[in-house]
Image 1 (tube, one colour):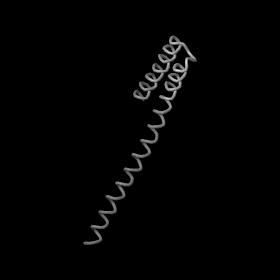
Image 2 (cartoon, rainbow, N blue to C red):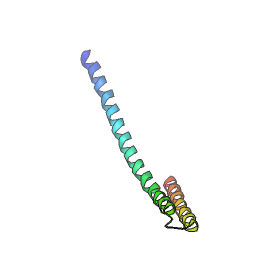
Image 3 (cartoon, helix red, strand yellow):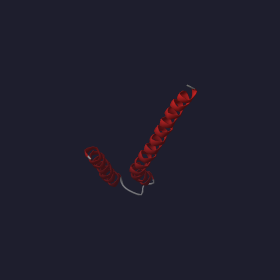
Image 4 (tube, rainbow, N blue to C red):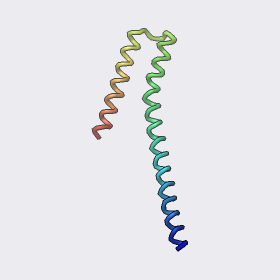
Length: 79
């Protein structure tokens, strides 16, 4: 009877560890994708703050970046 209880514990423990690994891998992938997409907007904001680009240029590029981000998001959703 002790062996059966220990086997059940090991099975539950193994499933929990596997779940944590899958969750960690998922978070790693989604965090990297989010950082990449946000990096472009971050750079654009910095350039605007340093007055390297005009407000017109900022708005134009921001629109392009957000449109591209929305397009990629909808493409991922469809697939």
